[in-house]
Image (tube, rainbow, N blue to C red):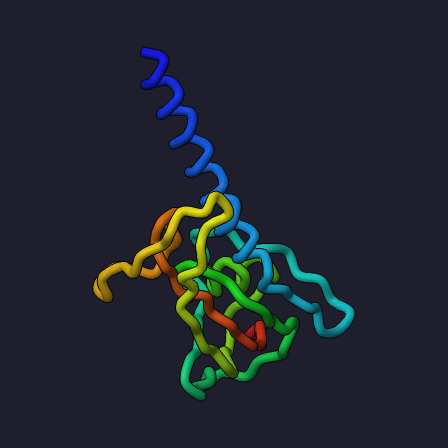
Length: 141
């Protein structure tokens, strides 16, 4: 029983540190307000648009904020969340790149590559994608 409790405690510590490193990586994406007006955040139910690859909305818009930095996770979900938090209607991604981070975890557990068909999320013991982005958050007129 004692060995089981020790093993359970070790697993809990590994999961805690693993989740903390994902949260800190996502927080490296900063939003800088443009102009004087501050907009209220949108709810998760309200749709927002994300424009990639040089595409732009056909409607007129004002740039209300700029986003830059790095994050882990699914790009569409992370960028939609940041757009909603800034009160925007859409985000125009002007530059996005990624690298594979397969460094060792803070506990020294060697990380291995996941199969290509699995979404790029961090789990202790696996490599994951770190995205770097520059974008504009907009409000439709």
